[in-house]
Image 1 (cartoon, one colour):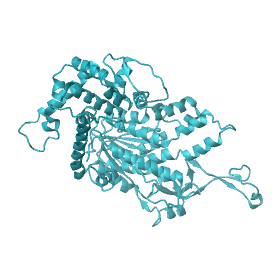
Image 2 (tube, rainbow, N blue to C red):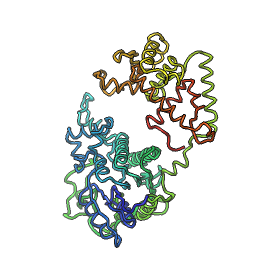
Image 3 (tube, rainbow, N blue to C red):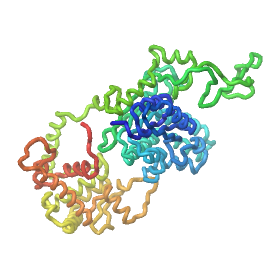
Image 4 (cartoon, rainbow, N blue to C red):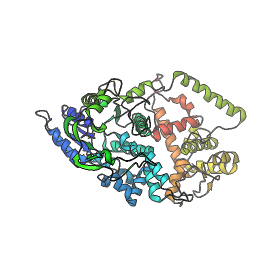
Length: 564
C-alpha cells in the first residue's frame, strides 16, 4: 500500500521495535501516526520524540494513545491486579473472555475503540502479545488455587475466578476475534505483526529460564501462545475481504534502545540495595525461608550501574548482554532491521521474512490426485445408496448442525419435488404441506435426523419432533431455555429441520439464485472460465444435496476458501 497520506497505528510505539518502526514510517509521510503504549507518559514521550524526526516539508499528525488493549475501554488504564481484586470488574473480565462475542463486548473493547475511532488504514502491532498473556503465569495460579483449598478441599470463589481469568487460549482467541472485527469495521487494509518465537530463536535446550526448571514452562508457554497467534493470523490471512495479514518473527535478541549509567529499573521500579554482613548470616538448619524479613539491612541507595536497555527484554548488565548476544547463544538483530522489513512489507514488497507467506508456501494444500479421486469416492457412495436403498444424508460428525439441517432439508425437498427444477416450479406453501406430510409418514427420515440431534420443526411452527438430546441450542450452563418466536427462528436457522412455509420460500430463493448464476454463463462458452456450469448442477433435474450445501456455505454464508 502507499503509506503517504494514510493513518497508521503502531501498537507498542514507545517500545524498542515500535519506536524504530515509527521513525522508519515517517520517511513515507503518513498523514497520521497513532502511537500507543501502556502508560500515558510513555505514549506522550514517544509522540513528542518523533516530532524531531519528521522529514523536512512533511506534515504528520501524532496521536498518543495509552492503555491496555486487551480489556475494556473504560478499564484500559486500570492495573490488571486492581481488576482481579474487584469482583464486579473480575466477572466482567471473565465474561468478556469466555462469553460469545457480542456487540456489547466488541464495542466496549479498548482495541475496537482504538482502531475504529481513528479509522486506521494500517496496523503495525509491536506489542509482545505472547508475553502479555503467558506471563500471567497459569502455573502459579494453579499452585495458588491448590494451596488455598481448605481442609475439606473446597475453594473460595475469588481464587477460582482468578484461575479462570488466567487461561491463555481463550484470551488469545478473543483478542484475535476483536482484532479482526475491528479492522473490518474500520476498513483497515493491512496488518503487520511483529511476533516472537519466545526463545530468541533457541531450542528446548535454552539456558535462559525463569526458574531452576529447564526449559522453563512459563517460557514455553510464551512460545506456545506466540505459535498459536501465528496460526490464527494464518487463518485471518485466508479470510476473504479482510485486511492483508503479515508477520515478522525475529528470532534473536533485539538490541538496543540506549546505553548509559544510572539506576537499574525492574518493572519500572528501582532496586533498593540491601546488605547482609557475615555476622548476620542465617544458618542452613531445619528449613529455608524463601522470603524473610529483618535479615538484610537497607543501604539507602538503589542499584546503579552501566547498562544496556533492550526494550521488552529488559535492562542488562554488560556481562548479561555479552552472554545472551554471544555467538551460539541468542545472538542479535537490531530494531532498525526489523523496521525496514516491516515497512517494506507494508509497501507491498517481499522482504523474505513474512512468516504468513512462508506458511502459505509450505503447507500441503489440495492436490491433483485428491481432486481426481474425490469424484470416484462420490460415485462409489452414490452407487452404494442405489444398491442398498439407504440414503447417506448426514451423521452430524462434521458440523456445524446447520450443515446437517441443510442436507436433510434438501433431501426432503428431493423426496417431495424430485429435482431443483421442480422445487422452483412449486409454490412454498405446497412444498411445506408436502414436506410436513412426508415427515409424518416416513419414520426412517424422522429417525435418522432426530437420532443425531437434529430436531424437526413441523409446519405449524410449534411442534418439534426430537430425540433425547439436540445439538441446537447448545448447552451454555442452563438445561432449560425460554421459547420465543425470535429464539425459535434463531434455533431453526442454526440446526433444526424447518418445514414452515417461510423456510420453503427461502429455499426457493436460494435455488433461484443458483439458477440465475448458472444461466448467466453463455451456453457457447465451453472454456474453463466457470467453476460450476450447468452440467455441475445436472441441468437441475436432480437434487444434489452436497453440492447445494457447499454452495450455501460458500456464497450465502460467506465461507469460501480463499487460498489453495
